[in-house]
Image 1 (cartoon, rainbow, N blue to C red):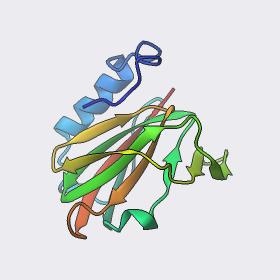
Image 2 (image 1 turned 60 degrees about the vertical axis):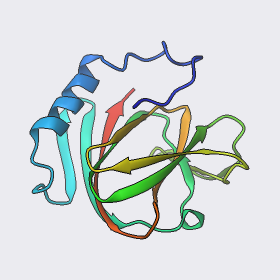
Image 3 (image 1 turned 120 degrees about the vertical axis):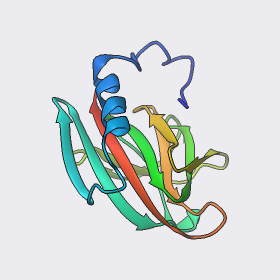
Image 4 (image 1 turned 90 degrees about the horizontal axis):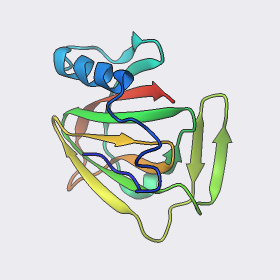
Length: 149
């Protein structure tokens, strides 16, 4: 699945070599056995393996990144990710050094349900709220691949 707006659909090549390398790494790595941590994949591509328990959406914030795409890939469990356009959101915290920007929740936003093996590709123009409960709180294992724009 890919979430984007037609205005930016041709801005990026979602099948350029960096994306292909990331997809290949996700397919060929035994992620269930990969410990939590950071893993370089290639120049401008790194993976972060995470484990956590999902929480109610009111405990999470919408976030964006300017320098990176996120490929959010669920290894195990279920989680809901809020998604909306970054434009018109009101910023609440900005950390340029970490390329992490937080926003107030909009009145309306979409949701994506991720189950084991599912992923969503999030562009810099997309705000996302990961780690939310999908039905009930549960432990998840997730890989977030960061692709430098």
